[in-house]
Image 1 (cartoon, one colour):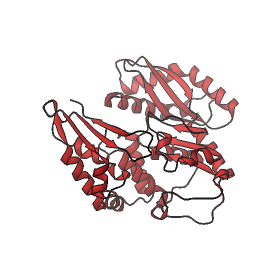
Image 2: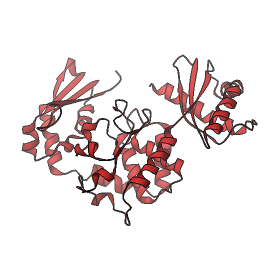
Image 3: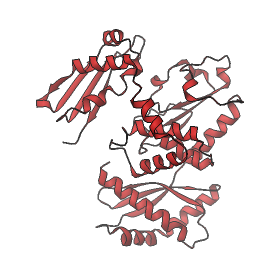
Image 4: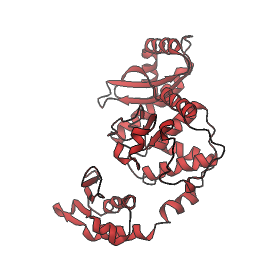
Length: 334
């Protein structure tokens, strides 16, 4: 999606969010406009909405919104001055409903806990004898292979898959995948808001960290107005910006630094500098004393090369992985 269309979608969403509550039709319940998808020729806009209430309330609300489409289109035309006002199609967004279902599943199936644990104290893998009685929540995992302990997928009673990657394989029993979200944290924030969860400073800081890293410190093209507004809200809710920056960007383990040096050493320019490629072999990981997760972010350093329009990093995966190698691509608009 181009930056222009993203701005159009956000503007239409803003107008509709303000206009719908002013409609006098008694059939319209409590409506939240979650997403707008407008075609590039401005002929049609699909408007995703969540509706508080049961199936009957949702049906009546959608019928009323369809009936008021002409009025709402007129409001859009008047306020935005687009060369063409898109026809509106209202669609029920089940994302929040799925989020509610996820929370209920967790409440019903997960063992009760009496204490909370800071993220820094959570082990990567926790072995438990009652895995078959537990719910597996996969967060920001586009494929099953990214789950650290693959046996959990088949052992747990229910798998909840929460993500924003467009190539997510929908491997969960319940899938909540919002492809136009800047980050999985943005998806979780919407779910929490829909459930009325109070953001503690600890929750706000965890979500803020995820937004910052997935948007490349708000520099990548997925940095939407919604992501920036969410970041501001999270800071107001107690996220410590300075602490996050130091812990994420100024606390680099030395093995990760050595691995980056190996990747830079292997880097090669092609096509007159328009393409930059590099590789990391298993011997590089061993020489650096680095684990596989330390390759995260290496490609961003290659992406910073002046004049590079396309960068690629190929990694040799550990023994036992489902594939021998994995490639990552990043691009700049020429």
